[in-house]
Length: 410
Image (tube, rainbow, N blue to C red; front, side, top):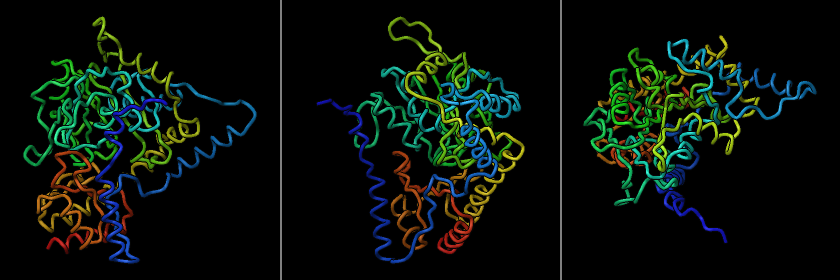
């Protein structure tokens, strides 16, 4: 019989998810025929953009013809999409990124979870806390997390704590990690870093030879002028940072799965055996050749359509829709006097529990407002005492939720 990777046993049970499902079942039993307003989802509510649908239909017809036949594309991704990304996401903002530094992926989550394939197990990992738990769990199964202590902290992970004490912006680590996962705008807190704040992290990484893995999934939702859309807007970041982008939330690609990873040629690692400097771009190219294909031609044509004049306009309308939802929720919370953050540069609001218990606030919102939220424990040890509200919902439902929250808070 084959032996299993026992690390998966350490993350195979999601106690928070089971608890949520149990409480929803209880709510439905007590309130037959009533469905709560779901403000807990990270999935989108709007349909695919017309420009995307048109591009997919056209590419399907193209593949249905006899000539020319288009089969498996380049592992790095199709040149037409890479060119569009370089031109619109970087060159237009004055950022220098070359086409060979772009890798088309099947969504941010896949590459964030897989980047460890080219990292040694001996690396010490730094993660934001609270944070989306893929960052932690992918390192658990990759043998980099160490031992789980008191059911909360992994011994080989440096937790970069973000709470109300530091305005949800973590301090630079006192204990040096080898790799730091940063995610801004942040899920779940909704906080984004200004240029000056992000520069401190880049400077720290350069000085201490630390690799930054920067998740920019929610950059399209940024509204503040002093918040960079890419870490490469910071001088020196090309030497120390790998960046992940996704079309999932801004363009509704959660069912299509497409994004891209940026690995500048300057980013280096070191061989544990020889100490020789190795370029991560070369390693990732080899990893992709071994383990992955880029998304289908149809999906990449759909993503390319996002960079047309019509596509950009439709993406902006999508983003405005969700940020309008966030604005309504913020206004409702302002009326109650309850403490929260986020909802300005990200579609998430991080709401503080008056009872210092995530589950107490979760239960109050569900039982008294018929609103489903995400308890903070889902996002790590420092999530205790908060719930996340998501703006990814139907606007009519958000209006109802905002009224209920405002009345309830009074």
